[in-house]
Length: 460
Image (tube, rainbow, N blue to C red; front, top):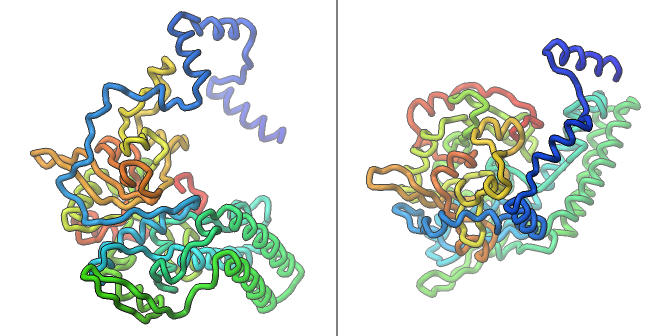
């Protein structure tokens, strides 16, 4: 520690920088900088007595300027609700497919069983964790960053589009009625907590077995026993997933029909003809890295044999052009963004001009640069929704967009979220786009070998 501190101090000294505490003279200056004027006292009274700073910072000049009408909108119907879970990626992936299912079966409403996919997602993530433990068993559990990363959070209910794709390709999907939600699929924190406790125990036991000279065969036999425990915990909390099912539904014409199927057959019958990781490309707007390059996040998947999170980094104008084409062709898009900024849930509107926090505090503290926000961890993608609509002006320039959210119909504007084009620039990160809507330059770039990034990279 002393040597490390000395090296840091030497580096600071060489750069002309010195560590310094706050002395009393500086403290007096800092205290005097708060003027204690009548406007300061008024702001202090308001801010110190109100926890909801949004209500104080709401920009009155911008109210009433944004409507919820769009020139181009995908034909969607019904709002889903992920409840108290991190399954937005799963809901969004399925919400994009729902309109096609309703059209195929001539029904007015439809939803998938998210509980079914959640079961297999957590099951497969548990297996992947244990496999990672086996492959890194001889590395230091404290000093090796990968090992520490696995044990810090063995499984969670988060993910991206490829997570849905991996599970659906292996286990299929089923209608909501076939495997309904349970208390633990709607509120996942308790199940995740107990499952992680179990996995850390089993993972540590595997490391000790291998360190003690036990064979790989013995370690894998122990792993299967661990997965039996995982399956039991999931089955008790979520119910057992069906191997085959009967689904009864009513058509728009009032006819009652019945379908006998397996989850995999049902999945294959409802996906678009070219649905897959080769024809549907995840694109990212990440200004911290070069555009027109492909990046792959190491070990970011759920099934051991599945595809990792892989994306093509593109400029905003290219992403927007492709998104407009998709929406105009009645195809919704998986999208994810930073929902923590400038979102008014009461109005269902997101815009960088929605709140004026700098006027409220009397100082400039917000970064205008997206790259700086990412690098300083001020901003990052944390919520997925289906991108379903775009509005343009007379010249064809994009003005605003709309999400179909998965927070229930009471959130936002009847479950939908309208956001300005500037908000798209600042806080949109990822979309999954049918390759048919990307230009040749983007498609050429998508064929390149990915740059491999660690799972603990700053963007993820």
